Amino acid sequence: MRNLLKTAAFFLLISAGLNTTAQTRKAVFIIADGIPADVIEKLNTPNLKLIAKQGTYLRAHVGGEKGGYSQTPTISANGYNSLLTATWVNKHNVWGNDIKAPNYNYWNIFRMFKNSYPNKKTAVFSSWTDNRTKLIGDRLSAAGNIHPDFAYDGYELDTVKFPHDKAGNYMHLIDEQVAAAAADCIKDKAPDLSWVYLEYTDDMGHKYGDSPQYYDAIEKMDAQVGKIWAAIQYRKQHFKEDWLIFITTDHGRDEATGKNHGGQSTRQRSTWMVTSYRPLNNYAKFYTPGIVDITPSINSFLNVKVPEAQQREMDGISLIGPLSVAEPAANYVQGLLDITWKALDPKGSVKVWVAADNTFKEGKADDYKLLATVPVTNEHVLVDVKNMPSKFYKIVIEGLNNTANRWVVLDEKK
Image (cartoon, rainbow, N blue to C red; front, side, top):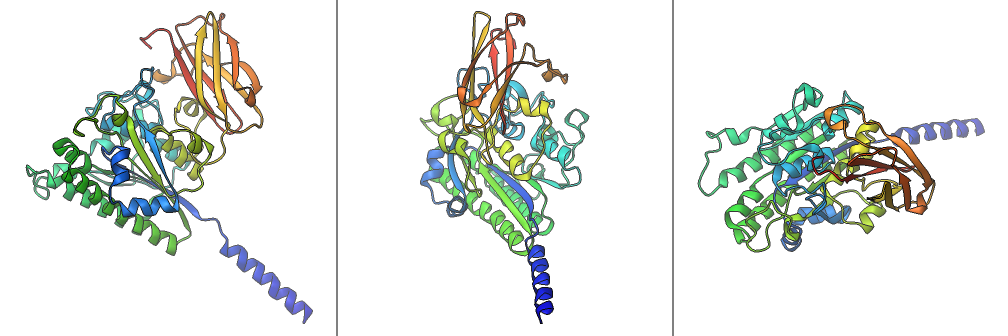
């Protein structure tokens, strides 16, 4: 009998082990175009609120550093690419919706993901084909020859199925198609990383400004998010999968009418994030995140290993997982760099690397020199760069858990 009990216990342990197999992690991010935080917070958005109740709602920002070298126009494609690359416009080089010359040396989230997991699946659901062809750089050698495994877009070109009416209702119908395609694909095929783009809200903002029509468009967007969220819940219930979702916007609107954007006013820079993840880290707790922080957060969740050269360029900081440093700053003073940061974890030291040029933007390696190693809790260091005379410096602060970067620009041509 004792032996039988031991055998039974053994098989119970094996069974328990099988039942606790690690879940496959998957992620979705949604950009709902052109909605400032004050608007999303006052409207009836039950699906966003449901996701935020499980996870977190955060006010956020776009536009880079106002008045600084990374100041970024609050325009749609600029915002999308700031999310995709975790960099501001001074790096990714998308200055407008024409997307003239994106700098693919700064990898986007799909390239990072495929570099780490070449056999996993990606998807794009969008009214705007340029999101795939120009921003992601579908099949372009300069962008790494990556290709979304599932692509549902180009609907804005189908004027037979979606005739372009003056009221702009066709764009709502296109967003309905985009959301339905995303929900169906997620439910049936479960791509590992997906981007959903919804445009109608921005169209109504431009046409009517702060108005019942604009608010109605946002509530319709919330219902579309609900369809995608329901598909995710189906996957979680029927498969061993752990899903992360981020919903955000690419820019706010002007204070006077709500019709315009592109500048640096508080409301044009004011955005938001909803995520299913909880708890976020101390950076999310104490600072206002930017759109550039979403890709590092997804990378943390999906355990994407980003090459060091790319990691050093990313302006975003993960909202998920342990961090060492945030809020980097630097000032040039008579041949010295006065460098500061905020320590988010007291453990360990930081290494301070400095390069005196920016050959990375040309696809070459930067010549970083290690100029200091100090306890992270110091939160500052003064380094001598008299032997590195330049009008431009790139600074990387490398902690145990993450890195942060900063430029010092003495020559505006950089």
